[in-house]
Length: 178
Image 1 (tube, rainbow, N blue to C red):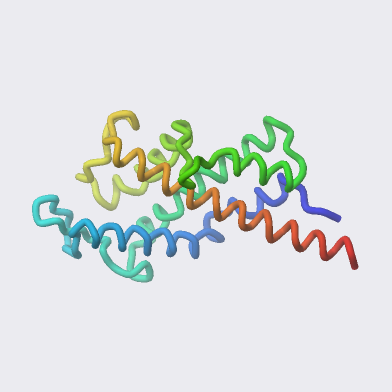
Image 2: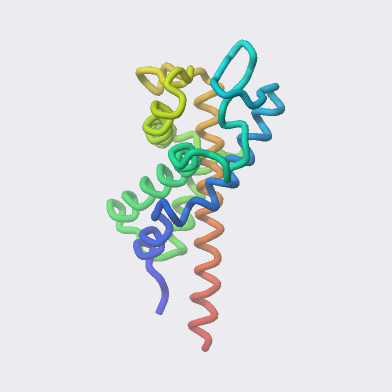
């Protein structure tokens, strides 16, 4: 029996299951932050370019770890809603839908998803970094760079979802032949 799109989305949308992906997201964040000149500091200081989360994922507070899962929750939640709304049943159709979210650079420029990812992140950031400059009133008030960064994070999540869909399709093919 083949797995349905809804069944796969229900399995991959569990926050605890996504923590390893959050670790990868944090590693990419660290690399970018270091390239931009940021270093560890006990508090955020935009002038000195210090942040408290320039540390290993393992050492982060649970709320900050959870914020690294935000793009996955955002994209996967959106896709799960679309599976229901559009009646997507097969993994092949699910893969095509998710591929359609990606642009030529592998980002998801969808403003609905960008705002959704930002809102999920804000829930965690308000507690961890209440003075963060991206804690603005409206997603459209973010800088173009911040919105572009959200699109790239959503792209990472969409590509991971495609990878998992392809893995399940391969498993289903093996099961069908046994």
